[in-house]
Amino acid sequence: MSLSIGIIGAGRMGRHHHSAVTNYGARIVAVHDVRIEAAQELASLAGTEIATDVLSNFFDVKLDGVVITTPPPVRLMPIKMACERGIPIMVEKPPALNISDGRKCLEYIVNADVIAAVGFQLRYHHLYERLKELIANQTIHLVRTVCTINYYLTFQMPTWFLQSEISGGPLAEQAVHVLDCARYVMGNPKPLQAHALTVKNMALDRTEFDAENAIQMTYELDNGVFGTHMNHCGTEEFCFDVEVVGPHLRLQANMADNAIRGNLNGEKIDEPVISQNSIGLDKTGAWLRAIETGDRTLIRSHFADALETLKLIDAAIKSRNTGKFIRVEEL
Image (cartoon, rainbow, N blue to C red; front, side):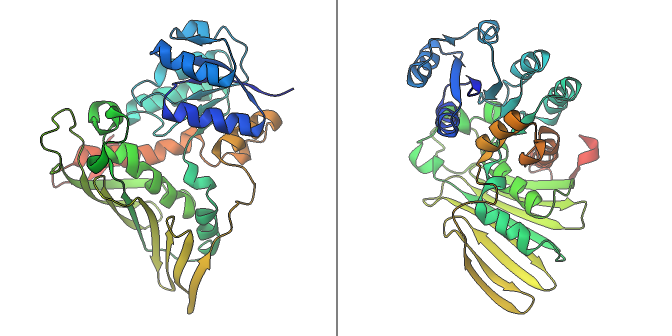
């Protein structure tokens, strides 16, 4: 019998997860959104009659798993209610708006001992899986990441993406993907401190948006690696880029080219990457398979580890334009 899955949050990511769940062979049996029309639209697409804006009604349905795609401030109650019922969870990134909320969510998850994944899809991308393999036995000293996107040019995104109170700003909404990916390829080191310089100098007439368009971030990890991150959300071309540097290597994994280039142990690397990862599952499929089999090792982004990436983001956000590094232990 196929898994019965509910979705909380019927926006763009809710629709994406609907496709991923049905492609896997599971069923969407209930949809919740504070906008009842959005819930009804996704429920109709999914072929279910359960569409509601009341969480208690949503959780009256028998569920094998819950996907939470709400804006980051709306995490505590859905996670609490799912954990009280012992229902596995898939939470979109970031895992919470801030580390304080994240710790409360983690407490619910640990006490309930439910399967809890976070939607960092780059951990399932074949490109970064291959980069992780290439550097597994190498010494890394520096890591550099880049994220560019066109939000401040086209405004083709949900409005709240550029409203810091809801999204957390570009660090939490965009940078979090490649910063988490950098941790993944190096074996999940934990952050020690971070600092960021930020500015909003685009679309000054659009006062409804306060999120910065340009960010330069520096940080330190507990494996001795120093990292930098450049983020711009007013650039024509999209880019996710991860580069690692050490005594015997410099490798760049660029998603746009789907290739790894550079040098490793004296050899030139120019390697296009195959289209499928080693487990043949994306983030949603891995979570669903873990529910079916109980094999939590399929999940590459557990909620507890995702909080380490959130600590890095939180420290950078708190440091913005202060000239000071914020140590993670102070959060």
